[in-house]
Each structure stands twice: as C-alpha cells, then as structure tokens.
Length: 91
Image (cartoon, rainbow, N blue to C red; front, side, top):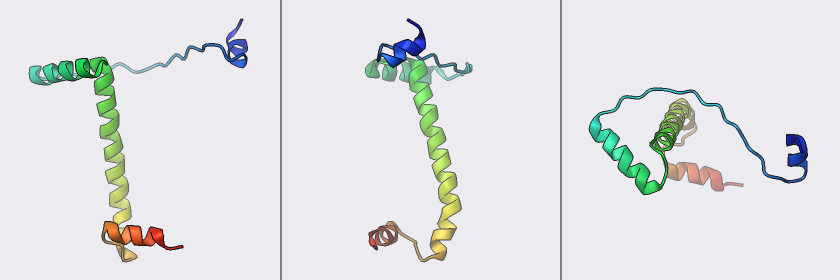
C-alpha cells in the first residue's frame, strides 16, 4: 500500500519534519536547569528550548503588534483594558 492509499483508508501516517540545526552555548547553571525541567516534563532539552524560543518569538510579535496598534487605539479614546471591553460589548 502506498502513502496515498494509506491516507485514503485512514491508516497510520508518518510525517517527516525537516528542521534546521543550531548550536547553543549556555552556562552550566542554565544547562542544569534545562536538564531538571526537561526531566520533570518528560521531554528532551531540545524540545524544551524549542518551545521556549517559540514562546519568546510569539511575545516579540505581540509586543511589536501592540506598539503599532496602541497609538491607533488611543486616538479612538481607548486607553485601558476596560475601554477595550466596553468597545467589544457594544452591538
């Protein structure tokens, strides 16, 4: 059975992801913390660092978006979270 037939019949499918490899140097205390956290979570240090980098990048994107939108919101009289919620509640 080929991969297309396997997918069509609902069989198991193997997904291959290609990822870049980077080398990261960290202080010993950071390595120990990564080891401890990865063992506690039952994941590899690579998976832990990968998720941390994803989150860091998402926060950076959020901050950039917020910096771009805050002036527009303030120009419309939106200065606080409560102002946002009031705008959202209006029909």
